[in-house]
Image (cartoon, rainbow, N blue to C red; front, side, top):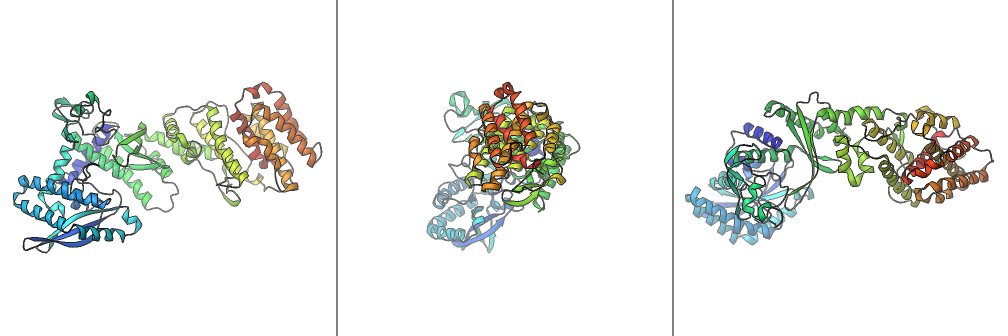
Length: 612
């Protein structure tokens, strides 16, 4: 993680909120970017006696959350004050009785001695009314809408002289939060980890004290044997990651800002988008960068016409005209219990110009192709639209290693063409099986092939694969015709396609296998016209084809055509296939099964383009 980038954001936040009290800097929002339903357990003080009053509900958002004094604690010890998220009620309420109240009472002895008996009486009233307040609290929670339950919390309030007081109004509560905000950087699990007169790993200055638990993001846990150095001595954890007090405060503020405003999703994968100025301490450029992202977020929230938030955000970043800041993209998975994050990939210091190339310039080039215009998007439905490049396509074909492919694309790493063919065929075969078995979601075959060509063209344009292929220049919209039961074949269209695509024009083996796929498509059309079914599909082995299968399928396809028509039907196409297969036998034997299958299925799915 880029510590300087986090610290700079936190420092900017600290300067903008210099008027806040110390406890307000460490108060946290229960559910960032969401309206929290805060259930209030209300008490009332009358004539020095404290009574349980009932349950109320309030809405908590980024404007008023500090009043409710929430600060997350450890998974073992509960949250820091009486404000906590909803969960196991008995466990939560007993933590208030046995931990939070004693902590508050202990702190008040020093900070508010006049309130010592008040806090004790409040605790006694809580214990005496336990069953009643628990039942009413549960009922209030149960009567909420399902969505509200998912963002619920509860806290304590008390009426004194007819006026309701929230936790943040009590000095001891304020001190409890501020103290935890500082102590949490060096005190955990009953252990203190401090170094004296050591260099801070963030600001690189020698400080009187450095702390061992000051990292705002948990990359690992330090309460289990085997997760810390220094012979598992937690007291010396400061050696691993020494942070001074000022940097720890600024990094926590930076973490809170990043979690709330810079936490994004990229086609289902969570990541932090963290700007970093090119020049250190360039506060103005950093502030401008954060303002840009705030503006983009506003557009995303208030527009109903944006179909893909991911693509929209990346395109907006690409339109930034200068490179005075770079971006770090940290993809991670978070443990829901410990909140420790597991970094999946880290893309460091990516300039906006790289976003412009990947999400604007190159898509504009590869999208401008007749093959991707007016495509049938839904199997058995006539709903047509243009195909456009999106990382959603990358995820469809590389779902299990989406992180790796994202890294390679951003960093300009290459991919083997054989791996590309393998990925294409895995998706094509799965779709083919669904179609044959009439189950699951089925995409139009020509749509899948178009996606394959679009991805391949995109990778070629950003120089990710070694290939001499040129971008496909397929037939125009006017040349497209519907499939009919009895068809003729336009050999000139096929020749033009082969000529305009060097993948086939310069590779006779690929041309022959592609042509065979077209021929088999014509066989399917004949069988469909005659039998209303396509039994020849059983010859294709589920599209797991080897060099030996090619000659067999060609022979059987010619025999089948002769059954349904005359021996000279599709003569030119058959000659083209035969010539290319016979003259390139050695090349075909060296081709991978994936490449053979891909070339064949390209012809099979695009075959209808050559009908007249």
